[in-house]
Amino acid sequence: MVTRPALSVLDLVPVADGSTMREAIDISMQAAQQADDQGYERYWFAEHHNTQNLASNATALLISRAAERTERIRVGSGGIMLPNHAPLAVAEQFGTLIQFHGDRIDLGLGRAPGTDPMTAQLLARTSAQPEAFMSGIADIQAWSGPRTTANSRIGAYVAEGTHIPMWVLGSSMNGAAMAAQLGLPFSVASHFAPFQFQQALDLYRREFDPTAATAQIEQPRTMVGVNVVVCDTDDEAQFQFSVLQQMFAGIIKGARGPLPRPAHIEDVLEPHILDSVNQSLSISAVGSPSTVVAKLEELAAATGADEFITVSYFHDPQKRFDSQRMLAEAWHG
Image (tube, rainbow, N blue to C red; front, side):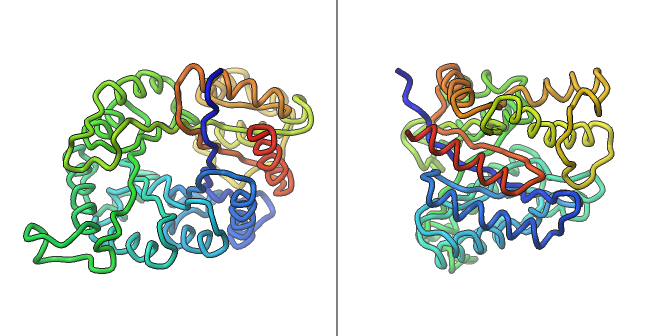
């Protein structure tokens, strides 16, 4: 029998049609509190900008508020998009978070801007090239480690000695290769980029270097992103999944907006758009609790994942809370 991976949550703080940014943040904080009680491993917030249907802009602030309202669960970024930030500022922010909340904070780092090209230019602080990305990670580690002669001139003193736990996020072979070379855990964005994710996992495990100066773990550790919708019945879950399908179709069409209400998807999306959406969202577990458990067990056997990070979009917050609860109950027994 395959060991069941740990369960975590990735939250982009979605804003539903008819709702406000404040309400979306409050709903996410409630979900984090419930995940803490339900046995989830970690609760991560993504970074996105210039998107009216996502309130996950100031990631570190969301992390701090969620950590204040929880007790056990790890809280972190999935991720901080490093090209948008000076590494010194990231070290100071996450060092401060650890000073606030202790050893429950994760720093997941990615290279994508999390926005459109024009907004990315306004945010840009460092290069997105692999060499700059890995150099930034090394710098953050140095500032959050013990003081040495190598980093004695400039210090992120609030981070010193915190040894900020880091993950590399990626949707490609490049991300996997960098995580392996750095000796860090790897989280693959298979929930929206499924096309090479298995090859990326294989590459990461094959090339993982525990002797790297930046290594924080001795063995490869993998996290697989998966879209999850759990309802009482398979039909109801497919109906609720249409919220994400419509949202993704809006991305394809360049017509983003607040989270729509669920609909019978064949009635609202053209067949060629729906085919494209479903290909991108193929790493999904949608259905009743038993259906979702079976799909996740199949995915665990295929990937060897140590952890699943689940992504869910609902127009109705109560449906979101119910799905999160039902998944935890079914998975943890």
